[in-house]
Image (cartoon, rainbow, N blue to C red):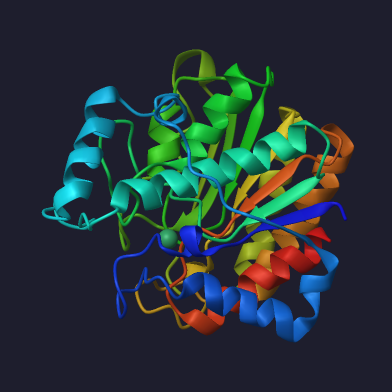
Length: 311
Ligand SMILES: [Zn+2]
């Protein structure tokens, strides 16, 4: 089986309590849908792993990692300016998201899997020195650093179709020409975090390596499909050694905190096309992460559509 899916209690634990949009029930909802579709029999199920402190330091500052460790003991206060609360064990839970994404990368780079999907991951808002928007540690950022520095990738592509701009990834690598970034998101004038304008294309030597496509509120599958070819052209221009897909389901119609109106057809299209590009340029190496998505039915449909496209 060429696709590994990462699943387990330790991974599900990353959430901000029952009833919170980012609640601990999200993984179970996804897996239930996998079972209903019989997709569970077509993937290799792998267990989560917790990242070591050194793994987190590939991307995050030592001061910030210490702060999360301390606040994890008391479970009090916020890890940013008021969106992302600490909870007892938040360090272990957030480090498990990162460790699991890293385990998926290692499995792919060592040839044990061609593709992988981690449902509770894709925490794209966290900065190097601070949490943001329900994201404590930025597994995408850590994975990109690991690919560049531990696995000697020359170039890594990061594609993000979550409704929110992947600001934590974008600004961390804004000046790094090795990170090929493409992000379709709801226009920042209408949605958190407010960034990702079309003119933000990378700085200095990285000028042109970043593609931001703001979508109007209410944008549909038709709008997505019309915008999508630019992503493929961007990756064709800078062929990567590895492709990361953050396939947040909050860009679907009915999400409680955003205004885009895609169906899972957009997520499926992105996964099918990126898999083809991965086969063409990087021996199939593709990692999908679940990202956001706060309507439970939507996240189950979007993530299983991505898995189905990858198997
Ligand atoms: Zn989002």
